Length: 66
Image (cartoon, rainbow, N blue to C red; front, side):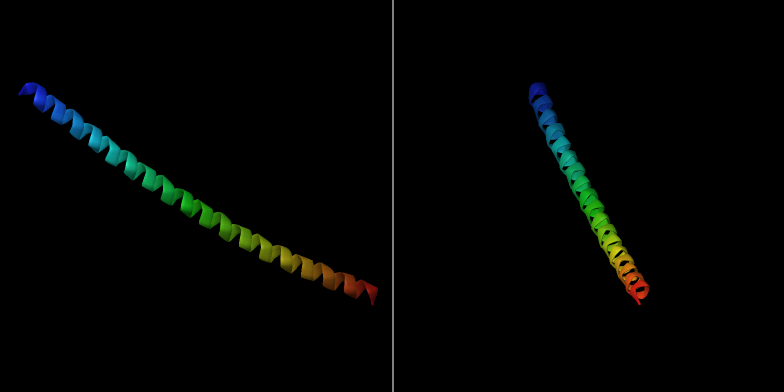
């Protein structure tokens, strides 16, 4: 009976560890998704800034030619 209890306890601990690993994996997944979204937002912001600077440079070249 004692061996059965120890075996049952061992299985429960292994299952609990698996659940904890699954939760940790899920937290890591969401963390990576947030980081990817933040980097995508940053990329869009940099692209918009570059477009503005290219437009200003183009306008400056046109002004110089006049």
